[in-house]
Image 1: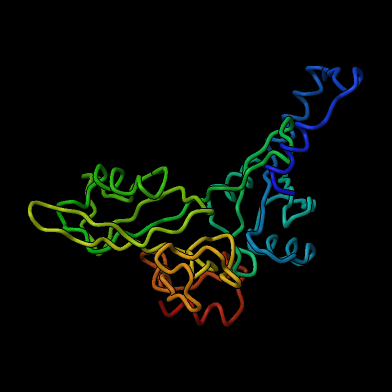
Image 2 (image 1 turned 90 degrees about the vertical axis):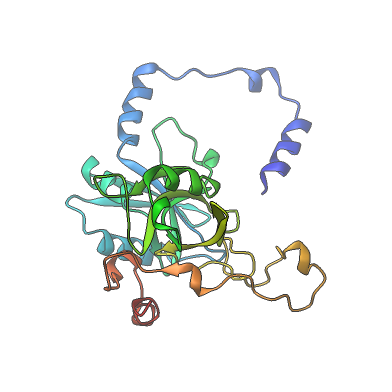
Length: 270
């Protein structure tokens, strides 16, 4: 049920006196559960179809190769509560995303013992974004932060000790809104000359070629761009060229993707 429908239904409810009363949780119990919550994250596979929970548990356990145990509890709607034995394992996984299951993005959220699962909002996921065709003079930490702020919150810019990154591209770690279309690039003007800077997303897998939203794969997509409204076969505005392998590696890491041999062939040649 959509959040708006729930809100409207809630507005029509008239609570009894007993229902309006509030039960207060003992402080010591709340703290105990909060400590356990620090070992947990909630993950959701960004797919419109159901997934096999046992296959998810086995695959992700093999991919992550943790030091301690990990437990999975299915929450419904492709969501799982994931509890780690050690905080080190949890931090390793949380700091290493994006992760994928069966080529679907696995979004992760940190939780604590006092969070309500139903209130969790899966909206953002960090990606390394490569900026191509930048003039060398602009490949700095300061410009990288300012220029990619249009994508989302900038975590850091991959630069050398002197604050520059004079290479084939500038890499920026950015928090991407998974419900908005991926940005394909942006113009930049240096002096009197304009340059088109193309964005390429590392480890990007399934997404909609029609609207560039990560949440679905494009089948029966209804999010047509305004200029193509009413067209029977609107041209695809996005494609595989938005994907790119991580810099300084030519090896497809199947552990990270949980991918098949076909996945390796497709992405390993990029």
